[in-house]
Image 1 (cartoon, rainbow, N blue to C red):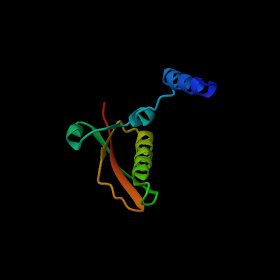
Image 2: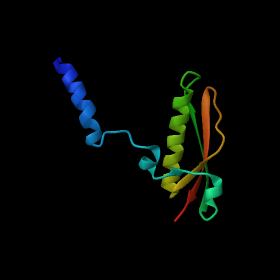
Image 3: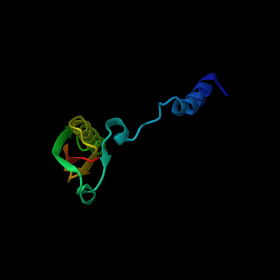
Image 4: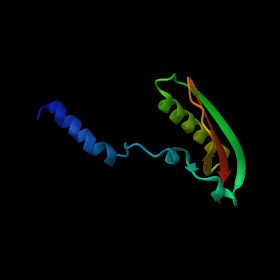
Length: 103
């Protein structure tokens, strides 16, 4: 094995052990996905809408970034859960999430 391959293999093994593994979206913001039916005993905080321009080639990336921003905004509002509404796609991706605070 050459030196570069040893480094790449070691980094692949060590990175998850060192906390560099990707975190689920809710772990970063503290806001979990749920359904509206499960939120009957929780406080409604309201909807948040976010739009991202990413063109037709990167629709999935645009939706992912918009959802991350909605989660961050709802987390700052004190939400613990989000119910996702309809998304629109095209050149601009628009995502709406409704935030709830549950105890």
